[in-house]
Amino acid sequence: MLVDVMLSDADRDAVQGWVRRTGIGSTVTDVQPLTGGTQNIVVRLCVDGRPMVLRRPPEHPRPTSDNTMRREIAVLQTLAGTDVPHPELIAGCADLDVLGVVFYLMQAVDGFNPGNEIDEAYVADAGMRHRVGLSYAASLARLGWVPWRGSALADLKRPGSFLARQVPQFMRLLESYRHEHYAPESFPSVRPLAEWLESQRPPDGEPGIMHGDAHLNNVLLRRDVPELAAFIDWEMCTVGDPLLDLGWILICWPDGPNPINAGAELAALGGLATRAELLEAYRDAGGRPTDRLYWYLAMACFKLAIVIEGTWSRFLAGQASSEAGERLHASALNLVELGSRVTRGDNPFM
Image 1 (cartoon, rainbow, N blue to C red):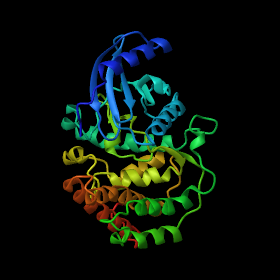
Image 2 (image 1 turned 180 degrees about the vertical axis):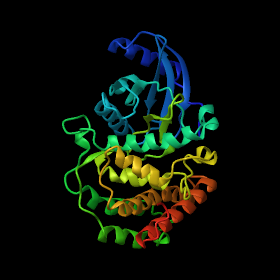
Image 3 (image 1 turned 180 degrees about the horizontal axis):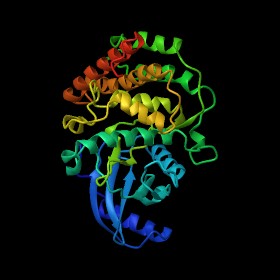
Image 4 (image 1 turned 60 degrees about the vertical axis):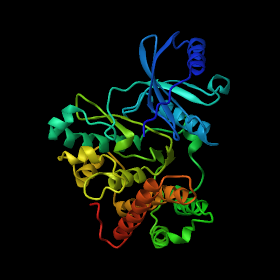
């Protein structure tokens, strides 16, 4: 939800002083909110007439907010000069004396977010709607091979098996939701899926950069041609197994099962590429081997289900709306059922 979160006059002056000290420019004008609230605040502004975007933690930051900003800065530094569509990093600021939080400036990308709007060119042309999905999948394939060793992202690579950490990590997340009105045992269907994922886990492949939350609400599409303009919202990026990103985009693709309703308005116009076509485009672009794809689809269902179940727990604790809690709880149950169907060989996604 877009809320009217702007930089205060004091914050604008602080940013203006910072851009002068760093040599970026001299005058900050035309400050307009893009998104903001409980997640992160994104503000469009101009520095000496040049459009830029400022991204910072929410008004009431979480304990991890500054590290999230540092992670996003590291991602954009690492992607600089690559053919993966991304906003160009202009500068990051880790000096808490400026705004009290870590923030950064990035290039203003000319594109639209299909979660918020549909450009008229895509409304008019089914061919553009079809081809843009193929560009999206190909861009994801290239992301997984971007060199990261020795980069600003290298510190995100934890020792040991990335895949072996996944089920325990997310079962701990589910347990963290416990309070007097919510017991993780009330979500029993997730446990057989977790056991199957552990028993069928593939060997770790070559580590690569993962977006971590790749779906149509986290991209910008070009207006002039059917191509991805940028992946955005990098807060869950890590170095791990890029095939999890592939599983994620496939389960979230709005063709048939659409468990989080991402890109539903674009899909309603018809003509989107099928999941099979996305997979072919991913392979043609040099993506990772997909012979164990079913496991990654099931894992994506498992992880996403547990993430969104947290809103149901917060609703039961009086910290989220009934509409959001009930809707996302239903989606979480649906995701576990979809993942369980994959494990039985009844793949609803392909």
